[in-house]
Length: 245
Image: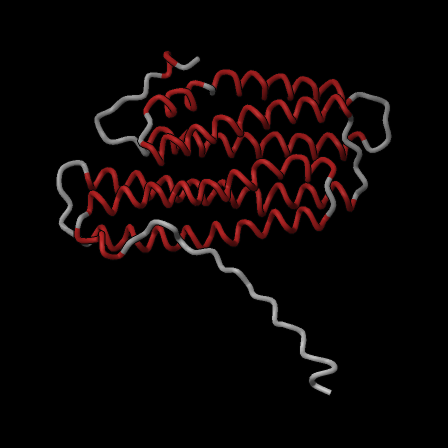
């Protein structure tokens, strides 16, 4: 009977692991800090995957898709815990020169990246489920407004993560310098929502509330991305936002 009806194989659960954190490098803090930068990039890859998928899912996806996006945050959480633990070990070594400041900047970057992922997992996913439960329809015009804002914030976030991983001051400059354009898009979206609020359509108030919440959560993501761009750079270097295109 066992031969005729064999047991089904147990599905393997793949648990994400840090790629770059090497215990042997802890005795050389400069190298260990460089590895943290790379691991923050690993965290950033998870987050960018979430960010890319979330708006289409909120506006028109099903609950299964939203749940799958939320689960990516589990990987983010695991990597975050490893990064913070590794930074704690580095902090107990003899740090010199700019190393304490770099360590603090990397810790803040990891914290901010984790917060950004939580905004998607807890807030935007919930808004997507609300849209489904309340059968809220998002107009084509509003989708365009939100998508344009989402694309701009996604680009700024990608640049901020690049700044953290590569210590790229130019990327940091561009990410921070995008604030004016993002603020303009947010203002434009707010005016669009105000105009749509008075439209004679069923469920307009529910749609308005949902859409405004989406805008606010996207703004929050950029706020933390901008903090990453500002704080991860080595002490003494100033980001010149006037050079941003």
